[in-house]
Image (cartoon, helix red, strand yellow):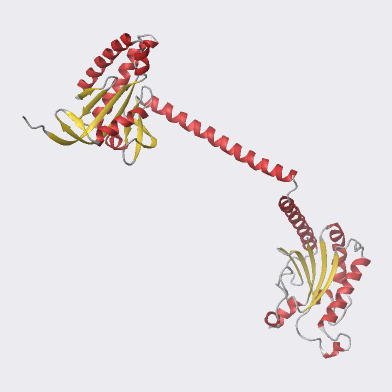
Length: 399
């Protein structure tokens, strides 16, 4: 008994499959057998042209070996073109449409037949080809990529039944026009999908906001109120800024305007507002306060008059009048409040306050945080320049 020869080699493998063959047999066996003969006639001519070796006919398809992927792809393209031309000349029930799969891999040849994973992969991927289409693996695509008149595109990664790993598959097109038409169609679908996605996102967010507003969720109300209040504080800042600019005080060291997390703070230095050791307002300070009245009355938040001092005790000459800085701060705050009322301040709304901080809130500390520690106060008054900044009146606006 002669021993069989076994040879392992790298080959391009093609499988073809007639679309709806079982259905055709069920409807008209005799006519389907005639169409199968026509299918084999066309196929064998193309295989021979590209040096394809027919391993076996599989009833409704063929199992073919080629020396290269390029030969296999050229044969597949011509095969599809031949069937398209044939189908133009016959009625619909006599048309032949096929799918083609191509892979490059190791195969085992024994007694003229081929076995191995390369064969199994090719048989599995044929089903991923479209009707009248060609599907190739990434391994086959690598060897034809960049070749003239070969147009292909990845259709994704797939698991193949009983095959280990994930397989990247490509669709091969008959010509450049078909390739461009398909890619443009895909891009158009993506753009439509992106627009739909954006529309759905906007619609979803809008719906959520509407629902939350309808059921009166506090957090939504708070966000809206915070937004509105911030806009009002910005307007307030701009109004004060215009007044200071008109009076050439924007660059002055005696007046400072800031908007921060606390709100809006308009600061006058002590020397700009009062003569040394006095509770009587200076004329220049009175003029500015009168100009603030209309803006203060139009503000619907809280307005505070906060008087501050440094941490040094009053000079001996003033101690007969003011025993402590807190007493001096309180008297000066009362003087400012009194003059504001005389100038037209609406103080019956319950939103006007006066606070006498003495040295407990040095310049730069936040009203929203706790008061400064003794150590912080000491450091904030360590020089004459720092102490001068701390002696001030803050007109503080907030919600």
